[in-house]
Length: 134
Length: 156
Image (tube, rainbow over all chains, first blue to last red; front, side, top):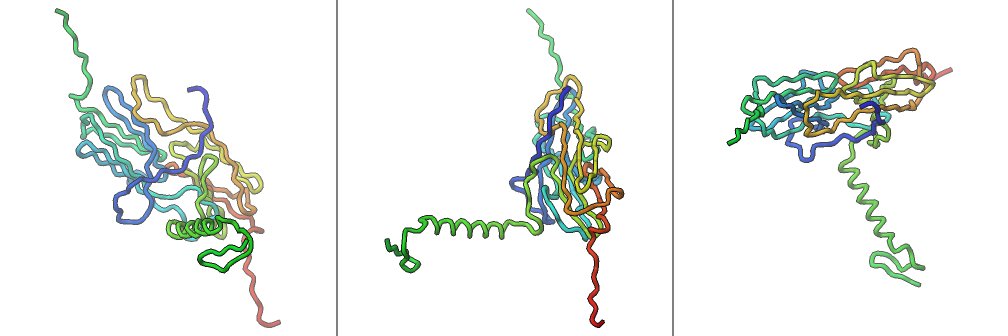
């Protein structure tokens, strides 16, 4: 893409029906891009304010759950002047239909973006099947 | 025309027939604000990207914005008078040839926003850091803008 457009401000989406939480706070759904190649599925999630040790990734029964905890970043002496976005943790779930090779899942968190690479299990890699005539 | 409503005294004239409804709407608004309102400043809808939070303590203003996936060299910050300008571009890398997207929610593009700070600032001591996609700009208030303690004397 050669031209860039102006970014529009969007309000953060809250999770519609959050599960009961142990600590009070807001839960947001991070924006994600999901794409796949023949070998793997990649998921990119925007989770600003989350450090690498605060991300939890869980894959069980075909359901992928990603969540990120955010440590409160305001000092105790600070008072609010203008508040346009709220602070809260991130949580999102996806159901995966392809078989995933769980041992080779790779996760990387850089600049608040989680990059999750899920290699497909060998039997899920599409194979060309030659059609014989006759 | 004399009107008598059920709860009040008879009154002159045909008053606003919706007055009771407006009263009810206003009281319901106050009720929902009391139940769901959060302590602190009221939440404003962001009109320009990025959404920011401004906080202050006695020495500094803090401006924070969520900018995931941005590198420090893609952001430009300028302080002019009382205004802080945040200008930059978010780039999303393209991912190879053979990719099929299932979901595409993240956006890339340029942004430019000027934020007016509530008081005078010292443009020479501004500290900005970008950690995990969260930009925090700490701007020192100018000496004149800091609150000065005034001691009250009890005798001359």
